[in-house]
Length: 504
Image 1 (cartoon, helix red, strand yellow):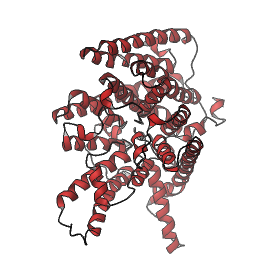
Image 2 (image 1 turned 90 degrees about the horizontal axis):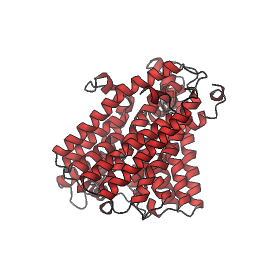
Image 3 (image 1 turned 180 degrees about the vertical axis):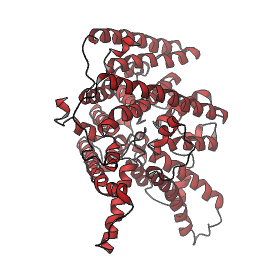
């Protein structure tokens, strides 16, 4: 363990990737699929050797844990690790190119869940398990990076909290924390997060098995829902054995991605304590209750002339389909309920996919595995908008609710607005590049939003027949960059241009 501490972060992550390859290898051995088992085993041993050689060759260098080093290590991990992760997939699925295999693994690592694999039944189970394991590990890396790296730098949504606390400069201060202090912070976070993350995943898997899912499907869906990666070995959730009970269980675990206090409360063992003052949770609950209700009521309002008001069974089915799918896209999980098709028909909307795209743009909580703008920023913009509308009616009024509320409405909304503009420009730039490469407006919009919000299944919500597997290598490269930008957020890349950062 002391030896690993002297290795660069990227080398440690490469070794962790190599060890993780043992999981699909062991599963393939249990299925007596020896080709798949050997492939993952050989790649695992190869990268363990390569990682140890790189680690031993660089351990003599003093790696300062500066802001620049941390951010570059994080960006490098997302771009470089899929190079190794894609090799066994490319070997075992000859119908796809290495570039497509790289995209598949990057999509899993960023918890996007965009897949270019053919029909799931034609792909070996260990490959699906490998995708789920990578997505699960990517979810943990996202939470750990947010708490260990982005929070001290006031990035990733924590800049809103910094304004509430009264900091004048909310983004990236100059200075390097000592090596020992950062090591202790990292080790403490690892010790506290790993048991919780594993325990939550194990609970989800066991409960899904109890409800009727096959063990393999239950484990994949448990890792997928905890990381909000949307990775499944099935075509859709209608093929699960757990039925509606399984969907209900997945919905409960998705709530952890709607507030930054989800895993934090688990660490403090106060998860059962109701916190109705949490702005992220209040805004999320408003969305997942109001939107399904409006979709159901729209049908009843339009059913007066067709005498369909008494179809309560259809109403409940449509409500559940809307409720689960709304929560899924708000948390950027991206899998649809088995009743979503019924909910679409019930609402009578011609383009309900636009609502889902809006939800995944809104995103989940800060310091969670969810993508998007994040609910805390949306809340700050909402409070600022309400205040401005009141000033139109009473120009001389004074906003109340204390210093905290005033800072959220002013400094918090200002920073949130800057991020929103940068995020919108990112969507526009990605759409422009995809359009220049031959995609239509709707396809470019769906692919851009799906990758920048890390909600891979959202690419099909507008009814397009195009899939990720139909895209060229250049188009996949554009979307790969978009996935990393969406995962790390554009402010991280802006921070890399900060002159104070290069003065560390």
